[in-house]
Image (cartoon, rainbow, N blue to C red; front, top):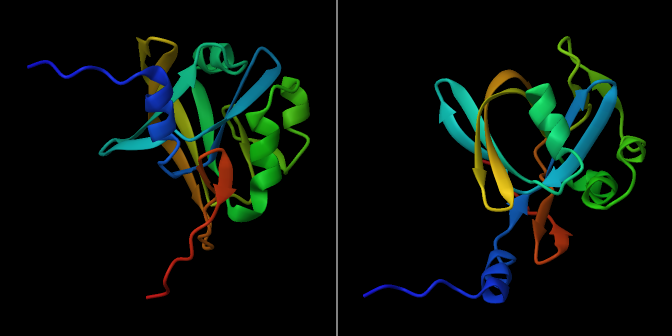
Length: 166
């Protein structure tokens, strides 16, 4: 017996119940920077270190990530909600980079200082699906903070989690 696929509205409502960490995906190509707030960054493999991120084709940074073939994944902390808001909106690309301290690595990829962690990634495969493309990317550099207080997003709101000290 075939199971009916959920209606779009109920599917979206169900997915809003899942809390996710917030990351800023940033890339630069041809002198243009772009970025977006993403809740779809996921580890794929530790050997080689690989992640995936799903980016909507309508996102202003989509073409830049494809053209650059690399990006940074900047995992935000609870004190960085304003940065998440700036990259989650529809504002001009360059204005999004006005919040936080941005630098470039030796490949020219922009990344945000003072995050929970930052991954510099090289795209190894693109898998288009419906309105999005799944980018598989090998991690070529990792920066990790000692402080752990991730910014979470669920049901259209930011939140946090209190981690127990072991």
